[in-house]
Image (cartoon, rainbow over all chains, first blue to last red; front, side, top):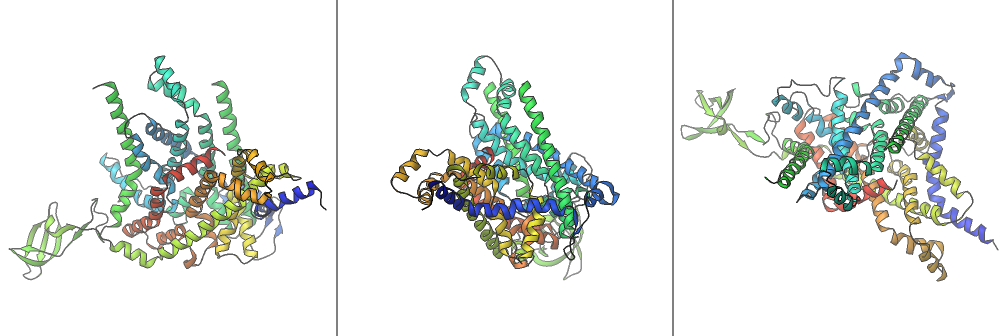
Length: 292
Length: 318
């Protein structure tokens, strides 16, 4: 006869079994393996060779790796995070004001969240078309000369950012809207009695009370922006051009050049980048919250 | 005007402005998708079509356009060979060109891709709900050695971005000959540390007394999980399910690596392929994009509440 604790333990492990199998095979195992092979040179067709830190050295020191360009491009896309949040907060704020029929607009504001990024990217490829795209035609009305959104290596990142903001802000709007509905009306009523106008109420009540939401959207935004892949791949037909970021390089090195070790090393650098930025963001925001 | 009216007007202007920003790209895509060949870039919203017959001197005559002028066309009448100037509207009419849809549908097996996407996404969603709820229950309610240490390990991996995992998982699937199979797409999606964490948090909020009562009635752990925990967790399961479904339905990175057989591709992968074939043929590209997002839009219109709740719950509790 088994003891009670032993039986409990067995039941516990039985429940955990399918879950932990997935965890070991598809999360923990890959993490450890990825770290290991980042010190190897391996092209799939021959035996892996231990190369110590050569992958990392090539990345950082060899000019041919273009590593710093890719880091720069990855960091550039962080611009979408604040823009996305401002658009999302504006949309959510005005959905939530006490004006008749404002909720009707919800259906438009939330819609992009379910659309596949590939379809959105294809639609925006045409919007950003140099000769006939909607954006240049609209800008043309204001006398602005045509911009080669998808071909000019300086503009392509802005072009892609536009569609990322278009789609990504819908997620933020949903989250902000839910948070806004959680702010008790009494706070605003008291503020109105004290003579505070809408603008003042927004800055003194709404914005500070949304701090956890700002934090959440900021962190998920940073993580998402650094992992931007599908729109870059689709809009440039896989060439990436001036928008070539770290994740495109991870993809390219692994699945086109089969440099599995180098690609893994790159993905770890990407992780460190995400980690540092999240930490920085966390420190910065918690300090700001303290001083507020 | 009363200040209240001025404010309301201001609010409406902003709401309408934002709606235009969100809706215009889709309307533009729809408008483009029904345009006629040669007329795609005419800078007009409506689909104009050119005919080659018009009324000349009171009877129908076949003509050929020689020159486009501002408001008129200079045409040569085929029968007599004479040049005539006719008003633009005589040779142009508005009619949506649905052929673009038929053509992309013929070239790309959208029906097949739709089923592939549906199968893969449903399998992943269902699988993840099962593994995450079992694991979440174990972490929240069962006692076993190492429980908290294992859970901490789960939490630690939440920070690791997906790309770190892809090369090893690719190699693992390759080892077991699962590249270019549905299993290759589905298996890695059957588990998520995040989903496990989410459901554990939800299960913790279910009163323990309910469980104790069932145990006195003689229910085993699995019975409790099945008959008490799961039914009480409807909202959380629906939220996680919606979130996972949308995510895998729209996923591009992983299926594009794993699925190379044209017949097995999911909607986003097939669409990206179409994008490479129909370079600059925007009318057909827009038609293809709209076909592929139509199911998502329909689903959204019917289940809007679940979609938003799913995002809010999975987002905020995390």
